[in-house]
Image 1 (cartoon, rainbow, N blue to C red):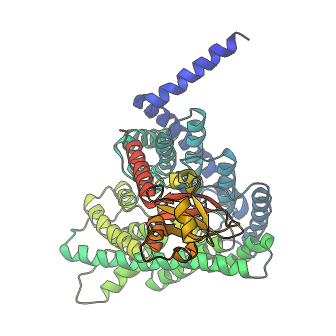
Image 2: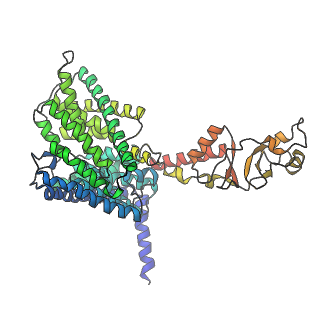
Image 3: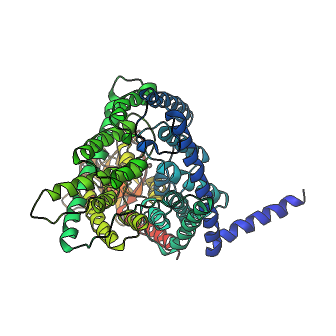
Length: 580
């Protein structure tokens, strides 16, 4: 019994060290990076083991297989049915799982172990069966989930928790490609949502430790060998900027296509249980055209880059790959579009180079260079993160000149998508579910700062049928600026300015309700601070009543107070973000 207080004090001191020491947080990030690397290796082995079992592979990548017996394609609908049954049971018992982007944007980095296991299992089953999705979503979820679990146990501050989750997710992605810079920028741009001084060291430590681990294990870095360096000219920059815009168009079309098909399938009479299985059946004829549509497309990308492939075949692969990814996600398979977008972008780049080659007014483009630029631009359009994808080009090619062009194309694609569409694929799907986030920036505090927490209770009220004379006796000048009006049943019916009742031309026999304003405008206690600001702006009011579902007055709120609280919280979030 005497040991318990000492143990608790020891745990408390241990936790306090991680809350107060930057070095301790960096050390924790190293452990998270190692764990993320191990989880990535395990998930990769399980998924590719399933592919080898289902499709009779012996070391080759599924999308690089020369041919596959058609009977083996029935693994797709069978796995779809298994996935549907398991997902339905899990979500019915709990809820839709939270991914790392949503967790960092809305929940301060909090991800339950259950959510992590559900997302990872769904993605592994989908990819392992050959659905046209990547494992990167599972890698990031596992790394971020591990970080969140450790952070919750150590009771890290909200800002530190978000950084650690970003570090874990970025470390997993970096380990998958053997590219620490790619992982670090993935953490900054996609999971944390900002570059901050306080996050640089922990994120870098996690990504480096994960990549060192996978290399010690013997997993080679993902490298694309280019046939030969070609000088980059000013015309090349302009042409590749155009490729970036084309990739933006295609990326937006893919994102809208996936969500449109999802909505169509939800409205269809197809039972929810059978949707992934039917999606698997629809993938079979596409896979019979070419196995390159299966899985994420790692092997297929290398095949198409390393060989001189006819443009007609590349166009065919592009069409069926987009269709396969759309069907996979639209019918309920789980996974990401990270590597699928890289593969699609490489195909678009090669087609672009082929088209330019038929135009005598432009110098020819190298198809391999165009494929790599297309990879970066398409991934930015769909996944986001222009520097993430540019660093990926650098780390897989070791070509600085090509990377500078990739940055140009990526920024063009990113700007166009932001201005015309406004979402990445992950935030677009959240938007379709009713969420309002556009990036992983922390806006969760806005939801917790509600009208109910900000309002002033005990509002002065008067019955709308009260005479002006009675109103003057109850609320003399100087006692209050505004009074909330209610009807005979106690329901809100407007607001009156006290000074108006004392206007010299106002008859004392008139009902005070005739002076009321905003009878149909009021706030509810569950509205967040941003919603409250919008109500003030739209109504052009500086003072609003807060009512419940039955119309009873709960309190009041002023525009000045709302803006002050909002500014205070923004400053607080910025201080936490930058470690001040």
